[in-house]
Length: 89
Image (cartoon, rainbow, N blue to C red; front, side, top):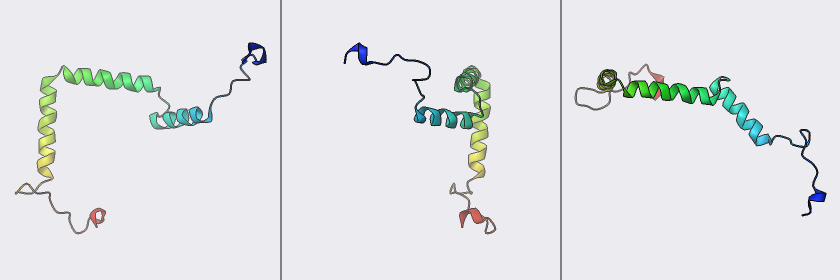
């Protein structure tokens, strides 16, 4: 295609793709308007701090075990739901 047939790109001739706009809108709603890069940065900071804290890791493992044991009966089988709990009906 010869260059003479192309229209010059201007701000008005370039329109954002509707899919791009929908994706950005959903990302903004999911993140509460916070930039995704800030969320990733916070997660990386948290994970590096945890990686450098073996004592805290041990506390979290012990807590997870307590919670898991709380959900099981004496024989290790899951506890039965109480009759009043309609979530499992």
